[in-house]
Length: 114
Length: 119
View 1 (cartoon, each protein chain N blue to C red):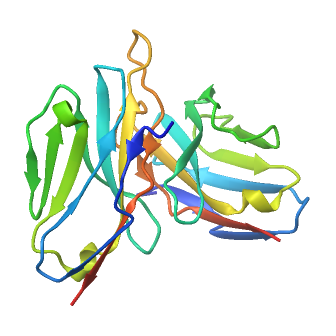
View 2 (tube, rainbow over the protein chains, first blue to last red):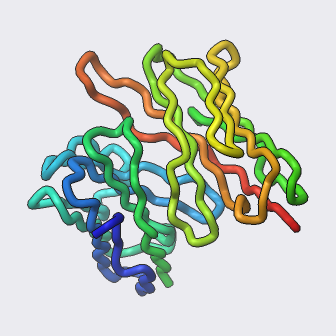
View 3 (tube, rainbow over the protein chains, first blue to last red):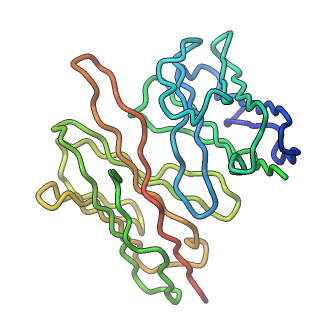
């Protein structure tokens, strides 16, 4: 596709449910990033992939958060046993090669945990 | 500690006025990149500019201009003759060099400045 796409755009989960958020980066982009953006705040880094390798997961807030990119293209961010504090917009971005290049962002998935 | 500070939470202007957004950053590295992104109401962040720490030249792109001053650790952004379409949240971000290889650290965003342009 022409840009980064994310699905679903909106997700409502009951507390304790597991959710999976999908990101399709720009074709050919080596790097993929996940961010969490709380209301009224800037995006906060969660994790970074270079191809299928997860090079940095220092931003994942707990072991309930897990991300994968098994074939170096599509990525999934999984949140297990969701909590209310997980409610946020989850943004995916990709860049041609590394972190310090222009990152192209998707529209985000708004997660609401009830 | 916050690496990027955007002290202005919201700025309201009338169309055609100029507006300057402040960004102050903190780093011990000599090599880093600074960025500005725009987040319109639709939510998708749009890249505006990237500046290498070794390039202090100011830049102008249409109605947008950027003033990079290493002496004050600032990378300010000015919109000249603002338009209603400029209404958005604007984020400043920093990426620091990591290690001796071509490796960079994560993007660290400021809290953003909401710009409201009224007709």
